[in-house]
Length: 150
Image (cartoon, rainbow, N blue to C red; front, top):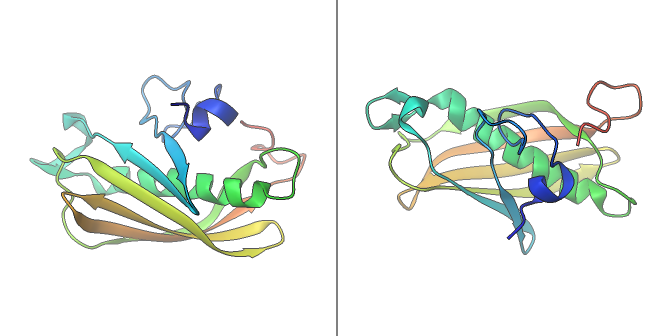
């Protein structure tokens, strides 16, 4: 099944979600109802310490996945997917994330105002929420370095 990144951003080199970055995380996001869902398997070099996923990797996973949720929501009523960037985001680490468990990312747009979208997301592993995210993502205009980055 084709992910949103493979459909809309095949040439993206983003470390978190770019299909064209062979050293990146290559998040693959899929629409499920009104939410965006991704599954991810960490590798040993993503560890903070033995058995636990690095917090920076957690931040990248949630930032990229939530950004895609915003882009998909902001695309409603537009002819093409807008290029979106992160304006702000906050991660709350609730518990250690086991590195050997499948990671489940969920994100949902909770507020839209013009070109801005607020998204809430979760990162789950072994059936428990390990981290949460709330961020604001903005569709950029021509002249911005990220415009048409997809």
